[in-house]
Amino acid sequence: MAQQRTEQATDVIVCDGIGSGMRAYIAATLHVSRLQSLLREGFSLRRAFSSLVGTLQTWRDPSLPYAAVSVARVLNDGEATILTYDAPAPILVGRNSAMTLPSRPLVVGHSVARQSNCFLGPGEGLLLLTDGITQAGIGRGLTEGWTSDGVAEYVSRRLSRYSGLRHVAEAVHDEALRHDANVLRDDMTAVLARCRDGQTLNLFTGPPADRRADEAVVRRFLAMDGPKVVCGATTAAIVAKALGRKLTVERSSVSMIAPPKYELAGIDLVTEGAVTLNQLCNILDVAVEEFEEVNPVTELAEMLHRADRVHVIVGRGANPANDSLGFEQQGILRRERVVPLLVDKMRSRGKLVVTSQV
Image: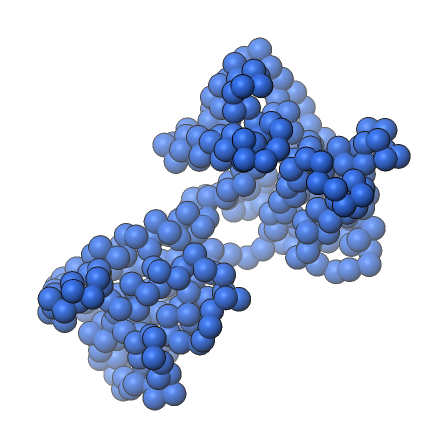
């Protein structure tokens, strides 16, 4: 499973490799990556999907990495298109009930895929499944398996008892496993894409190349919607000067691991620069629950975990502190090297990252 965002839409991809175990995992991962690459290269959703299906048509041999595919594209206004090939029908999950989405045939080469369309409002979701879920229960009282309709009925009953969609996917997975007497007979995946207002985070690091542009850059940064983070003492001093406010070190944030935290009225989080960004890069893939202490680095990581869209303003001005040989000896990457690594990591987690250099 993978997701990726653009300025206009969010894509969710689910591939189910034939069989189970490592072989199936490799097949699924291969085709998810292929579809992601095509979409990033600018292919339309249908063209990218058709290209992948064209390949899969020739890979039905059990010795080849075949997979079933579901891909959903949800535009910013909630309009959704779902394309499936050899995969179960998608389910629209509303606030109080769920339904299997109707579909129409989509001819791709010598095969027939399916296309569904719907509109997602706030608080609603789209449930994508693999056949390990819909075929659960075969041989144990369910002749055709649980089916997408059976899953939709179960979700509707659950929504009548519990509010919110947060744990729907986990509940569907557990119920499917129960239908198979808690024996994992096939790989099971249930992915719920929930529709909600996006969360934006704005990060400013590094002084502008032209000192005369400091105030204009700060004004632009402050005008952005969403929480604001400044990384770097020099950058923080520039923002403080533009705001006409005092920058102070927060004494209560002393840590044996992380660099200091600063206080600046009007800014949500102010941290040191290079060391913070390097440590952030090291822990960004770690689950928030595993953080061992609260410090500026873990605070920033948690904010990034919550964000859907991240604006990064990167100053190109020289900072003598970051050019120190001591930094190199400690393995601390300079801003111009660590920021691209962070951006790649955030994008790999499905974040929409917009960068600008000043």
